[in-house]
Image (cartoon, rainbow, N blue to C red; front, side):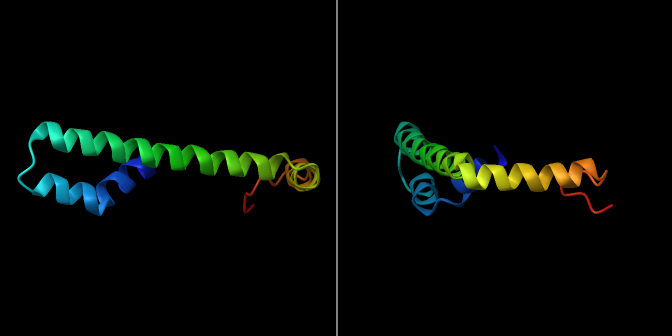
Length: 80
């Protein structure tokens, strides 16, 4: 949620809508549209990641590497 919030806060058009003479209703309308766009982009990126990780070769490689680390007592990605 933090990344989504950062993207909303950094959205230039949304900031301009808030800082202009727009009514609260108009700013809320723009806010809702921007948030919908950001969330859709987030979901699409996660779907792309899922598709990549679901590839048989990639999936087997990750499982093999992560198991080796786990089994050797290092934990996954740990610097022990």
